[in-house]
Length: 361
Image (cartoon, rainbow, N blue to C red; front, side, top):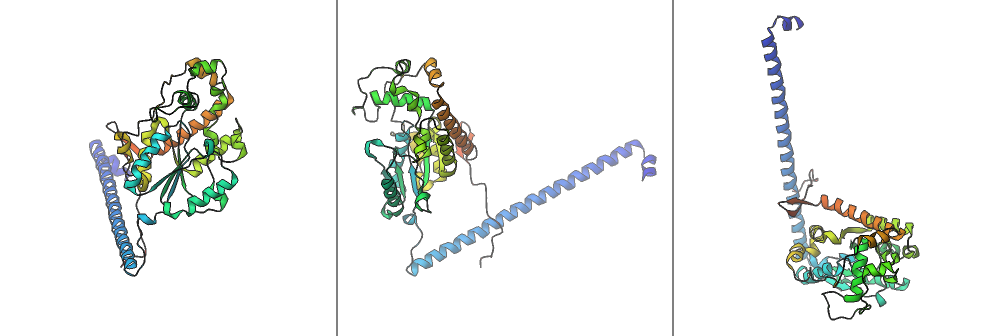
């Protein structure tokens, strides 16, 4: 071969090399096409097998109905969603969507109204609540909402736990909104007299004079709401509470959105829980209630005020939790939606079943 290569003219050698390269590329291309064709065929077969399995299941359900059994339907849905809403995080705007959808999508909405808006339940009330949620069949499927701290249902021996969802907000923005809400209310119920009505002091003035309504301790709310009913959760500035809140957010909540990106949160919920939230995105965009509630007379704090609050340990912990929640939500969103022409679109199903055995007859 070496002698043959030496005897060949250089041009023929180059032509031979090029011919060999083109042949290899052609063969590789053909192999790739065959692989793609095989994959398409497998997907088509899998869809066909799945369709046959679904048809068989439907026939079995119909036979069950003919034999006096019950068909599986929405009426048999036992799903329970709990939205333990944090105050001043756009929770009323979001809850109104559930109220507008409940009749159309056939589920129940229940407000958890605690005495004096206390987010911590007594031990006996915890037991009662867990029993009600799990045993009240006439109210299922259900969407519960209220300013209540997270409650671990497994602690009471419940296997079928509810689905928790929530929304968080930048801690300083949330506190500023709550501060002015107590004084001026909002446009949701403008005639209602608020607890601090008549107090004209701005948030900046409150911070400058070290007032109690704007103290760093007032920032401590989102962490304990996610941490739960442990005493340490409500120990202001507790690092343990922060870590427990993070753990619960990741392991016990289906999804946690952020106020600043509420539409994206609604869109993900509609894609994930259409049983409850089918039509929620359009309703959020066009509905009258979804954008209704805005705090009146709210004035943005100055940089000096924000910098002063950010010096506190409490803000650092609350902000760490908020940044953690934001990162988790953005991660979930990146794998759930995509942007096209300025619009967010839900990604289609990206998995399928194949090699389904035994074969249906």
